[in-house]
Length: 506
Image 1 (cartoon, rainbow, N blue to C red):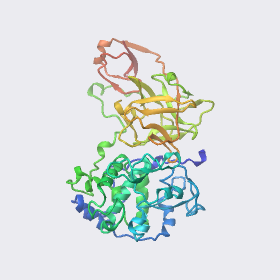
Image 2: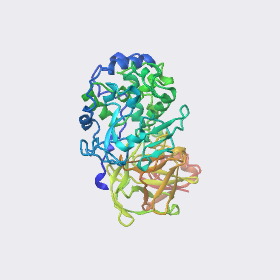
Image 3: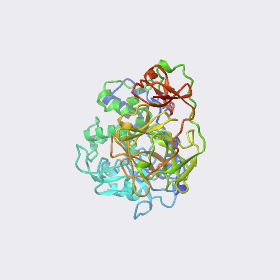
Image 4: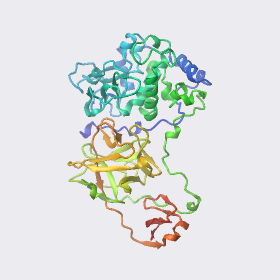
């Protein structure tokens, strides 16, 4: 229901490169100049000493550390729960998912014999749905098809490991939180490096360094890269510091794990004052880089006109019209895809009536229409406001906006008999654009989320069009109808913009 939705958009922006403003000045000074095992030990000495708030103290602490934007409990194991923090569902008995929540040791307490202070360390003891937590038991995190169990919507899974290096039963959290749990394990391996050699299980007990089995290190490095630090983690890190008196450095310094365990960065020294995020190359710009010099004198093309428009539900691929604006909608949630939030798309409230939506598009806090294009037998989705193509990059559910329509920006679109659209990545066919109702956003998922629909507007019809011979096109600075610079049109015919005027290249 709509009343259960909450706005997490402000919580989904990636942490800025090297941002350490949350930590007190000088907190990490003793780790400067170190790398690999020595860096891990230096961090251990910094974050190891902390306050043990006690196992019962976690209940009250969750009000500060795990509160969603709507005030409800943030549950990383289930996408359907809506618990009041400290309410009647706290620590109660359960029969099914959604009955109660409890305290989940992401590093099972049986691995360290329920010893303190690990038992009550809030950095790894999260509030989660009791039933899903019970199904996880004390199995390690891993990757699986979920042959033994899947939580509602396939959000979390339990089953035989499909990852090389481990063949046992594993619990796989959702892509949304794999980075969170990876950084949790990096923290535990660091904070307790003097204890983990005595821990049981298939993960820890491999000496103070590396501290974890190689298959886990490799997997968690991958998870951390594919699911970067989020504002949720930053806020929780700050809240946990206020409660417990220590911090998770792998949140304060995104990519720090590469300096400790990553082969490429093990020889590069850490600097808390001049930190270089090794994942910077993964971040796509929000705006198009400066255009070539032949367009520098062109007046800026005005922003797309945001008039009231009619969008109608599309139920067949044959009804899609190249060049037409599209809205990506989740009808059951009454929400429409909006602006870019680095690696996801935000949402705004909007309901369809009888298969029709009347709306303005193209500005902040309004629906963003994407222009439908084609590339061979596939489709492209261009966001003229975000100035880029919707694209799936990396191996997780990241919906970026990128400048060039490369392989990652190609989509196959089909429809089921109920009007739902399957917008599926060509480069990774097991991912499709869906809506996450548990953490409201539009992104790419390989697990089953809430389906989306496509609403199509009328294709713009140029009014006053000048003509330009095809052979002369290379001497003119042109932009397409979405405002993007276009060059080398020796074989292209169509309508373009030049200094705000429409030009027909023929």
